[in-house]
Length: 463
Ligand code: NAI
Image 1 (spheres, rainbow, N blue to C red):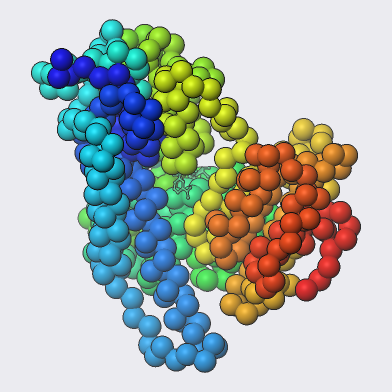
Image 2: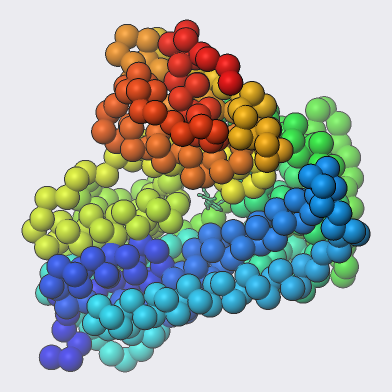
């Protein structure tokens, strides 16, 4: 039968398309059902285009500082529209790349909105598709506004990352609500393109899930660049008008009015679990709205699995991708390495970059763990001095007794790349001592990792 597959995946984002490829590699006939472009939020309106824009922002920053390096770039002019168009080309190339991978692996791509049906079936329009082994739900997440305080996304003055990625011009003034990864990255981008940015965060510090020292370093760095950071703030009301928005913000015991050309909502995302037939198939969701899954990523309905954002936090592409691989290996009867959810790196690609893995120092304290914090600042690292990327540090939290790497926190240039040394170490249960034993090339930013390791052992060597 033409509509019969071993595995059907609902959603062609990073979790879904990677799962589909692994499924096909394992010899299972596979279909992906996608209503929009392949690659999902990550490729089209998330990870990939933002990284292109962040690089444009970084180039602007470098050129502004170039004189000090003996390069006079003259007056630096920026054009957000041009940067946006480039980021679209990058996204489109990536989406086409995913299309190519589907063809190469002989995966059937069904265009349309899929709705689950009992008996491992999915309905698309009037067609029914049937899976003999598994239906995998990978429908992802979407932006959300705060209609309860007047901030429903209207796509003109109250926007989300979805619209910010398609603007032809950077707004003159912008308030960003939420200082998680989305808020931090867009504050970096728009500030580099000349926008006056106000970053508003409800919790007492920006990037609240990161180590407090990382948050503090970023807050200092952003303030230095002229980004206003208001943490511990409550937006009581937003009043959008034709070409401006007025915000009533309560912070430090006082209420103030902020008037901006646009507001960017970055206060979290909602999962796409509505109207896809979950209840009809017996697939339950948790109180927080995520699909309930067991350690094998199976939902409460046998034969239905869930991966990626819908299956719970962290809502990160790389977590979803790994789940895509694991779930299809399990369906194929293999025994994959269990996913260590406590070892998923977290990266915010603003400048300086923030990367972390494992516990924060506060979490170590809450758990009453005996630890030593080893630190090394990039201002003392030769390579960082050479490139002028002296902001930030490496901090390693070492278990006092066994030397386990409880957590690692990086702020600085290339932190997004350097973190993986510690991810590999933790995955393999190397001790802090074992990380330092590996000779680190000189001069590199990575030497700061070795030095932070040594610092936690009381043996730091300044370079
Ligand atoms: P988030 O949940 O990471 O951060 C939202 C922030 O908004 C939180 O700090 C929260 O305290 C704050 N907030 C919530 N309500 C607020 C209010 N009324 N007023 C002020 N602040 C408020 O969500 P975000 O940044 O929107 O990202 C969504 C998801 O996408 C996250 O899971 C994130 O990790 C992921 N993502 C990852 C990226 C990366 O890995 N670089 C980049 C972008 C998104």
